[in-house]
Image (cartoon, rainbow, N blue to C red; front, side):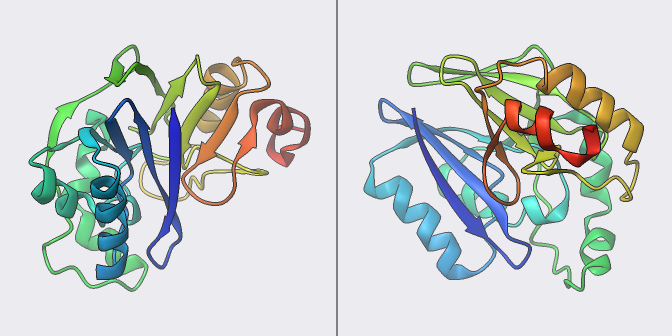
Length: 212
């Protein structure tokens, strides 16, 4: 599996394109500026990739900027967890908190709800869906056991965790879900977060200050 990481929009969200055997998934399409949209689109087109799934780890506005653009290009709708549906209804308020103006463009539609136990397939790859609430009620991660990789969204970062002071965040729940769902994975598993550099499960167990 090939992994391409883009750093998009003023809040520096990681957008991931995972591809294998000519098929790909896009996780957290967050491209905001026109040049970011072109960069994401050109990468997919230049490699002749068939987009099988548009996935979102959660539905905070900064992870949604490019979803409608991708949907319009590839005639797909994103997949996300039902528990975050309410965040779409309040996207204008989300954006206003961070100084962004809502013009109605950035509210996408969930095409299919996904939850713990679901499996996303593309090429010869399989991503297991893990429900890891706490940062938001519908936060999910995508785990590839064969590739020893997990795409954690804003649940777990290199040396930190997702903030829990946003709407319906829960600090204690997030810590427990990370311990249960992510720290139970093999230590060599690479964690690809929604912001910042990658890390490993073993490193976060040993050094993440929230768990010491």
